[in-house]
Structure formats: structure tokens, C-alpha cells
Length: 364
Image 1 (cartoon, rainbow, N blue to C red):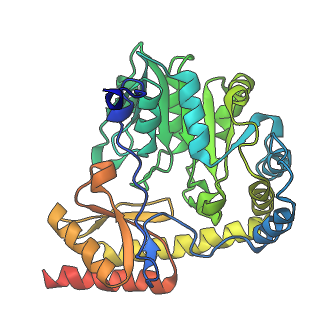
Image 2: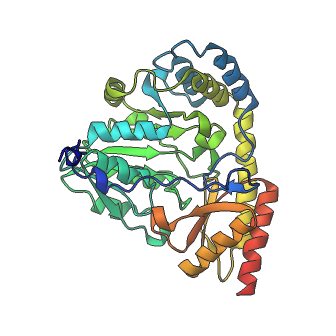
Image 3: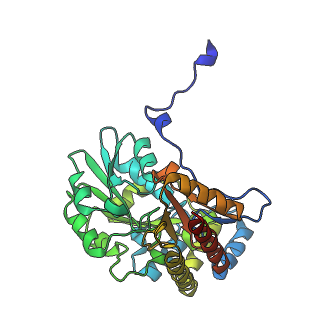
């Protein structure tokens, strides 16, 4: 009888599908990982040097507010460091925002193909996720606003979006905010901002500065520091205060703080990443676009390739894997059964991926 009595999770927790990370190759294999949107150029050498220096002092607790990191971010992005909160990856901060602003009976609105962490953190807070359809895989401001009810407390918006790579231009972002009640928090997840080349894009900082219900969240994971787990957010005073009240007291470790500060200041390396990505993102998109393959226009460091059927997408995944390249299947996490998300990697990897998929396409 005692075996049947045990702690029970809160209602709804066991209904949450866990996050599925991008697959890696088998241990010891030479498989090239193109499934997690990681930097193909590694990390900033200055960030690596800063991390090694900090690693000599692992017996010391890190500074609790990530002051050095916040000051570096403020300097580079023109933001008051007091308006910045750092976290153990941007997921850490998203979880905290959900915990603070969502509860039983509340709703959070997101795009149908938005980041798969949003439903997890919403349901974990006891709230309901409201999925909004995206015509042709693009966010629709009118549809998002139409989904808002008196129960809505948060809008989750990845811009550019993962896994589609599409984005809302600045004018549409402002129109979305203008249509929201002032008690609804608009969370702009700008995880891929460093890779955007579109002239009409905004990371959302102007809205954060001008409004009391907007937060911008960013990450270092796509800039070569995925293993360090560093995220940061900018928000109004009252949001920053609330997040500080419940975040972990040492939620960013010392090597990560120092590496992040050095990476933020190494704008030359960031620009090198952006240029490499833009070149090979556009090249791969052009190479693969055709009658049987469709590539969504992307502003991120990946592309989403759509195939004629889920079966062809599955065969493409296996064919690429057999050739030594693992990409992201978008059916299980995002419901895009006929899609594959391909991270932008080295020139060699991009040319090989194009060769494999074009050969498949021509053989059909």
C-alpha cells in the first residue's frame, strides 16, 4: 500500500510535453550538428580568454546581480544596466516571467509555430496557452489581437521566429503593442537579433523604453556561448523588480558572466558571425528553392525547408543523417510535419547539404 502513496505533481504538470532539443550525432561519430542553431565559428576568442581567467576562481561565489555583464550589455546596446536582468539562458528568464505574470485561469497568446518553450512555461504556471494560426508561416497581428480576451495576461512573440525564421517588421510590432491593454505583458523574444539583416526590423528596445508593459529577452547561445547558458532581458522598473525578487541569487555563474561581458564587447566577432550567416543563409536558400522544395525567407541563423509531404521530409532527414549531417525535424515539436530546420554552418556543410537535398529532389 505504501508504494502507492507518493508526492503528486500539481495539476497539469504531467500533461506538459517536455522540450525536445535538437539531435546530435552518435558519440564518437563525425556527424556535423545542424540541429540547434549553434555558431559555426565557435565563440569569441576574447570570451574564451575571459572564461579561462574566471575559471581560476571557482571557489568564489559570483557577483549576484551579474554587474559586470550588465554594464557591458548596457555599454554596447545603449541601455541602463539597472534595466537589465541576466539569467541562466533566456529560458530561465522566460520561466520567471511566466511564474510572475501567469496563474490559474489566465491565458497567454502565441503564434502556432512559435518557440516550443512557451507552452511549457505557460502550462507550468497553471495558465492556458492560446495558439494563433499563422497564414503562410508568418505572424498575423490582426489574428494575435483577435485572440486576446479578458483572461489574457501575456503575449509571447519570438521575433525572428523559431523555427520559421520569419519576422514582424517594426511597424507591425508597434501595431501589435498598440492594440493591447496596458495590463498585458508583451514579451519580445529577440534571440536571433544578431543575425537579422532586414532594414525594417526592430529588437524592441524602443518599445521597452517607452512603455510599461513590454520586455525584450535576448541570449548569447546563438553567438558561440550556448554551453555557458547566458540570457538577458530589458524591462521597465516594475518588471525588473519582480524578476529580481524570485530569480536565483547566483543564477549566472562567474565564468559565464565574464565570457558574456567579453563577447558583448567583441562587436567585430559578432559582425563576422552575421556576415558569414547572411552569406550562407542566402546561398543555401537560393540553392534549395525549387518546384519540390520551398525555403521560407529567414532572418535567423537557420532556414526552414518545406517538402511536398511528411514522408519526403522524413526521407530527407535520414538521407542527410546517413551523409553525416543531423538537422532538426519540425514535426514533433512544432507540428510542421513536412519541414526540416537546418542551421547555417560552415561553407563545407552548406554545400554538402545542398548537394544531398538537390540530388534527392532530382531523383524524384
